[in-house]
Length: 639
Ligand code: MIC
Ligand code: SF4
Image (cartoon, rainbow, N blue to C red):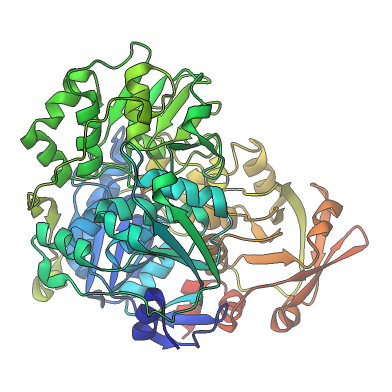
């Protein structure tokens, strides 16, 4: 039987399990990436394994999230990451060198290879034909140590693209259309493959915009074929030798198929506060805009920047609008400077920020109270911008530039077409922002530098046979990790200090949560469907662990978060009948008996005021053993 692209890569990397949808498989990992906000934890975890040198073909640590040093904390963390990389064989991409996903596909990604990264947008690499997956820091640490990465074998979705995009309609509109069709839950447990004649019209950076935002579908990954377009991109990066062709077999089968005619697509926007709340831009034109932010790992490539510069050239942004531009990488930034596009942006009134995540993770540029912010980013969750009542819309660079000019939501198709962007045949290559690790001899005596901000991990517990705890918090559907463990400029410096971070746990939902949980000593959280969607931050599991959370009972879970809970030794339990969710009240005392036996048999019963609520689990045998041992690190140590 024929295979899809992802199935071919999985088959070539399979170390355990059978490739049957839903069954756990282990795959060998060729490359890893981390970023600083999840990286400190990942490297502490790696160090605790006592392995002198990473066993991957290439591991890279990026510093791109915490680039505002308003105290010693981030600077200490960066120094720690740099020193740990030098010692253990990891490449270190310095702050200012760019956003991890952008730099990785420019400089390191290779079609056909596997990549896991401690960031949920790692699937960006699918744009050059990698099997790239977001994971928790502990899983990345294990992969750096040569261990396999485990996932349930995904089902395959094919999105066939026909036709060609019209002027001022862009790759962002394609993925927004996919989000409209599939929603933020539609990709859970799936790999989305793009196929059809339309694929040939999309450049690698455009493809990477689409695979990047596949994370918002909840998908395990997204992937494009590796074709002549991929080859041309790698050639322009001076890496043509890394190219291999990759495509699916004609008789490959898919669990679901979607078709999108690019010629009919129009500019779209994801409205507050969810990436799947899609409307056509032309329906929104009476909305006045306060802020426009262009950048992030979704839309910060050279072609995105040149398009915006062309639209703004010789013009001024509207008086009521504040415009930020964050180029995705030093390569993009220097090429913008070289060709004069940067001057056009500065002259038009843009505020140019450094090559980093910046406003996307709430690092500055929070909108005014109730402010409307149009962003080329990938997430518009409540409060993520740093302004709780901020109204964030996700749009293409073209729609963003149009609004910056007029001060209102404006369909860019109604503006004069500035024409297609001419891309250079070769990109400017300057890898001075990446530091190679020390050689093995020098590494032996190299020191790892830890500052006082780095606190030890929370202690995990072997699983108790009986859990009796208060239902500390009951939340609804689609709770994101930004709700559980918010980010932003005020809190991000403490990503290696779990006790301090814990004060902010669930603060956007219920400010008293952390205090109540700590006072109770042990607790259970109840959630709706798609609990834990969004980022890969394992802090959304480690912090609840620190606060005594023993189990989360939900209608369904997002993949990375469920894995992070298990890695932290917290039980992710599912209502056998989703309607039972309504029977539970915050504050109730909950009991689960015979936990060990129930875990073996995949069924447990929750007792709430005499009412019995049947629960189920979606756990592999390996994960059950891990829970019994008290999480991934204890489990690994016991082996
Ligand atoms: C995000 O976009 O939410 C982040 C910040 O990049 C996270 C990682 C983190 O919380 O550090 C992600 O996507 O995994
Ligand atoms: Fe950074 Fe935003 Fe991309 Fe996350 S989504 S990696 S915060 S740019």
